[in-house]
Image (cartoon, rainbow, N blue to C red; front, side, top):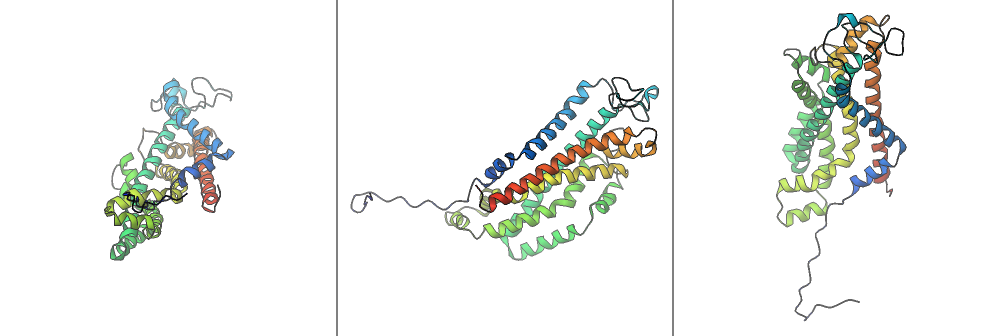
Length: 308
């Protein structure tokens, strides 16, 4: 039944302004969590993260203290191994499991922080360029092209090679080298979203450009870029290990995957565990992240193609 408001003294309510389509990110996450691979990868990642926190508290050994009497101890399952050195010791008698867990914690911290930084910086530049358009868009995208043409390793050697590397400088190098990918993706989303009705409606009701970019356009960035961010955490961890391996990462005595593996290459025949233990731990961490990123991409494609 239709109730007429003519002559009744009642003013019909205006139709609500069209809003941004919501729920896509939540649907992607729900779909991704339905895959067994996602659950397995997430469990492995959480388990490794907990080990990096609890391991140093439980293991009765030191990651940096030198003990010549305990050098080159094999893992516990080999002849000559002994507690508390479950996975053996290195050339200076330091516990290898503990050093690897500290190295994994450093890699996680640098990888996650770097991705957050490049996500914020890249998306801010990309959204602004796509929303404003014109010469601002052209200028920022040319700057992006220039930055993308510089290899990460070259940039790292240039910056870290002239100063003592530390976590902050390593994160700054990784953010500076990798933000253009996020700028490109977010610019494309902003170009598409700024022409839609909910953005026009926001302009009509007086919303500022900043509010439109932050409140309406920015949330649309997450679905196409979430899996890229997860994969980039693994990529940043690889770069952190590479920096340590070639001597421009976090400096000793702080353990990192790169420094541990680099030192262990001299003893591959007689003390293979010095290289293999951190290598296996790094491979497990990278495998869990890559698997989660792949599942997120599969779920995203399914939802965007019309899946429920």
